[in-house]
Figure 1 (tube, rainbow, N blue to C red):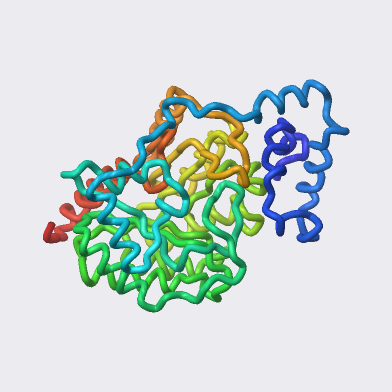
Figure 2 (cartoon, one colour; figure 1 turned 30 degrees about the vertical axis):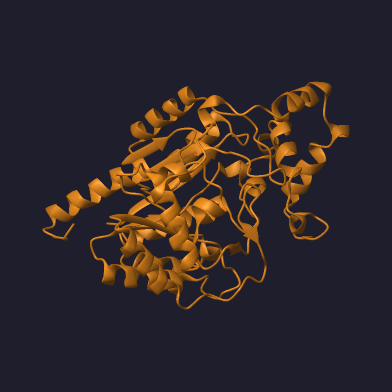
Length: 367
């Protein structure tokens, strides 16, 4: 547990995050908010901060021009248009669109002669949670699950001719099992129709229900991903209040416990106010529970309704974190301004690792 002194340093980063709370996360609506949250709210108020702290805050969270290394091209191309049309026709959603990923043009387009990739988002386009960094719509009572979705997903993926696919979902706290059986059914059906396809699943925390985690882990997937998103001290201010750093670690730890052969993966956003030591601590916590792969990327503000960018991390700094990840023993570390959890280069690397394992075990697939 962090002391209040550590939690409140520096004040400016918390002031930035608190300013963009979702309405139902405010103390008036949620009387059960932790006392530390209230302490920090009081600490960051103008009356309790020195002029030096005020100047630091203003210097850090004023609007900044987007650095050149974060500018991307408008998505175009035959592959991009084809995938978009297929998704609309089958009433499917992708996190690429819903989360406004800057790499959508590269992954969907992939050049006209390269394999395109997309991350399918299951269980609708509305999430029961409201993280301050995420552009996915929030709804406490989203639409019921589409029973045809598993079949439609398998159909779409087989049509695209992919070798590696990422399945993710919104959080569905309104469903008793968090949608874990829906997730598992989709994986089983996909593997039955196209056993050669490698499947990565990026899941939520299922409110800490480890039986739900196990259900997905045992469904036949190849990579289990769950994102911690940020460092521990910033988690209450970046993620929805129902998500905790320790709960996320338990999810990843349980996957390894019940199926050690599964590759596990997590992701961290940088530029939200974290310190180098906090990032280092988070990476060490992940390695302690044998997480295999880590991705680190720049937080980019989706809209003015979301929390501001605290700072833009330079490519050189991302190169540093790449070296740190490798030195800590991660199987794969992807670190760069535009790197996201579902990252094309990472999928290529993990795919090669899995294919090699299959060859060593004598498993043959028709590719």
